[in-house]
Length: 187
Image 1 (cartoon, one colour):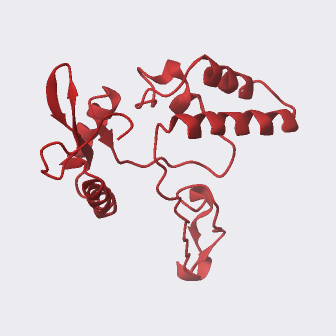
Image 2 (cartoon, helix red, strand yellow):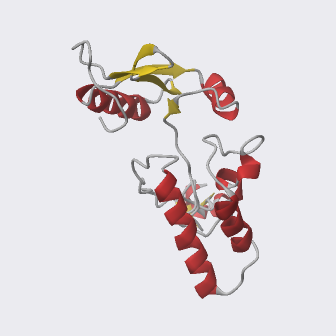
């Protein structure tokens, strides 16, 4: 309402005048087909928006098309997933403005301040200073809200006892492939 959105024609969708024309508050969210969790997330989001007076169309796409559209920034919104190691990683690929074209900064996040934080993280060795740089970068991300983080999935790993030298790890895919060998008794 503060931004001028109202349901002027009582059709349940907020609208406002933009450049002399009444425009409904609506957009499309894309995700890949074949992923029930993401589709369900889209439908839950769609329903919440509907109750708030915003119309959301859900469009599922073939994986290759979704990748092309996100890389070309050809979307209103999308639902996807980022997989990260539990170890500290380099934030440049996803969050630096240089990664907008040719990287994975699909949403166009960043400015001089966030870029400076990322550059400092890539060279700073002092752990206390690094911790503060990470906090500052996370604050910038939270302030700009380039993504709505929905969940952080726990990894569940089970390994049959017929395998020796196998151990679970927090790094995907959840086990060390080179050490995943059948025991002598299983041969």
